[in-house]
Image (cartoon, rainbow, N blue to C red; front, side, top):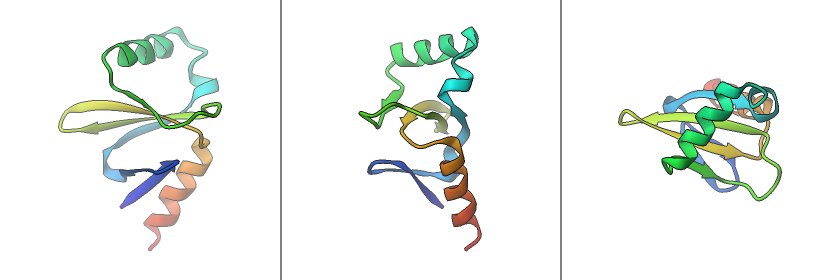
Length: 86
């Protein structure tokens, strides 16, 4: 099952480790440090020019990637649940 996480980006739902609200999670220093470290290693893909609302951590071939998305966590969750029903 594939999920559109914003724009033209579609990822395999099986690769998703977690979907996080940017406003709620970046309050904590540990999360900001994780995102900063991931960005420095070139493993963040920003898929929006708008204000980001969530980030999606994915794992493929034992490598983590983070997608910065304009969609809310609720929207992504609904897309995952909706597709799973078919």
